[in-house]
Image (cartoon, rainbow, N blue to C red; front, side):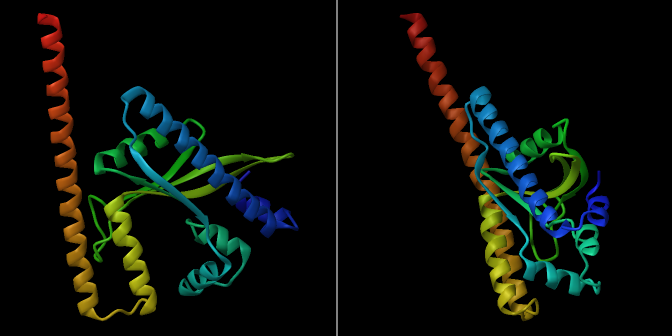
Length: 223
């Protein structure tokens, strides 16, 4: 069953929708934790720094529907907003983002609806992140409802920039002066350079560690 079908037949649809979005987030987060633990066990490496999740507040929903010029109905909310339930995965390095995206996309009980790669194609503001919209089946007592969740995957540096950019633009209600926008774009460039440098540094460290371990192994063998 799709969410819009449920809304048309359920008299307590709003409460049910809230339940479903909350359940969908829990299910996605559980999957991510399992994938992260498996990756740690197999590769001895943890690609995820932390995970955040949220269901949009009533105020945020109302504002977004109004910006779209739509009537505030439950059906419009569900069909026109694809980020009511959101999960954000914050990774150490950019390659980790694509590893996580591939592992999530390979889950047999998830349906990937759309992908937006704002890392390879940043927004004009400088915003970078990897977005996936997925549907996850939620099993209720009498039916199964496919529920949509937006997954954002980004690095720590990208998350830092995006959080501050959101706070700054919120203060200006989306109409920040041009010099503010210009400074934010410059900061986005600095963040990108930092991501690249930190990944290069991590690669050098891992190579040096492997080299030292091999030298120790060779020494033990010769002895």
